[in-house]
Structure formats: structure tokens, C-alpha cells
Length: 261
Image (cartoon, rainbow, N blue to C red; front, side, top):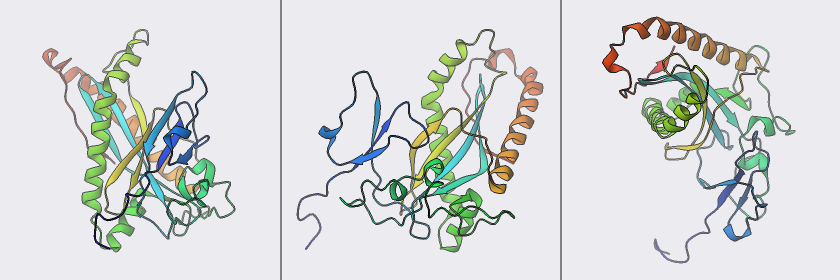
């Protein structure tokens, strides 16, 4: 039949406990009236992205790290590498039979590492065929598929910066609760979870105020050690350069975004 005929497909939602972590308590539904939250509990409900970009038939998301090194002026630095976390069951779409399969629909490492189909990185750090890879591996793979990794990464950076702009009042409020805190001498690493759809558009899933820096593989160690080292280098540089800001610049808003080495 032609386009526009027939009823629209049922919209699927992903429901998350606002205080949850590591994928626990998340489920899918296509009936909002079926969401029954306990009194006083809070949930986040998002429209489910039905056509994700697949890698080897599986969903994946990106953990992108960003450093907020200053609020006055606002400075955001985006780490040029990160992690890609794969689901462990091939994606077949949302159906009545698959809706409860967390290993198909969720990409959380903490869940999928317990799947019998999880493939760990090798001891020498080889990523191919593993269930966790680097963002640089993904971008190289995308280029090999005829995609434009530079354009995608530019969209990811814009998404991160715009999200931090939305978060700024909350970050500033939290900072003011710290006795003696100086907005120019504090920093925070944020972990953004981003899904890429089949049209190579990034979708914001969530941001973690305290992303895990644990490393249980050579891949984790390589990426997170570089992240921490780059953060400390920037922090030391920021403390030196802070004296160079003229008094009139303090309190004005500047936004910078570029990748960390």
C-alpha cells in the first residue's frame, strides 16, 4: 500500500527509575497507563528509538566523557575517545516476544556482562568481536562502511555542549552548596550515554554525574587512564591560567568545546 495508509505503529516507551543505575529496573512498554509507580517514586519515561544503528546485528551506545573545567567562564572539553557498549542479543525490533529481553534492548555493560553471549576484550586489547569497544574503533568502522565519522562526531559534540548548557544552573547550584568552593577552581567529569540511529543521528539517553572509572579490561584501562591524565593536565593548566582572566571576564558566559588529547 501507499505511504500513510493504515494505523500508525504503536509507540514504544522506555521507563527508568530516576534513582536507578546500571540498567536495573528499566523496562519497555507501549501503554503509558500501565506504568504504576509507587507513591513518592520518580520515573523517567522516554520515547524508544526503534531504528538504531546496528553493529553485527546488535544495538550499541556510546559513553562519551566530557569535562566541565570551569563555570566562570563556562568551559566544556570533550574527550576524543570513549567506550561503545554492545547488547548481546541480535536486535529484531520491538515485539511482544522481545519486549522483555534486556540483553537485546539495553546496552548497559553492567547487565550484559552477565549474559552468556557476552564477549570480553582479549588480554592484548583487541576489540574486534568484543562486546565493548572504543569510540575510535566505531568511527573507523563507520568510515569503512561509507559513513562520515567526522560529521557524526560533530553532532555528538553539539549534543554534549547543549546538554551541559541545560545542566549549568543545576551544576552551579550544587557548587554553591560546597563551603568555600570556587567556580573557577572546580571540575567535574560527566559521562554521556548516546545512541546512534540508522540515519547516523545521535540521541541523548542520559548523563551520569559520576561515571565509573573502574577498569576491568585492558581497553578500559587504556581509555580511562588517558581520560584521567588529560583531566589532570587540563586542571593544572586551568589553575595556572585562571590568573590571566581579566576581572571583567569573571561572571560572563563563554562556551568552548574541543577534544582532549
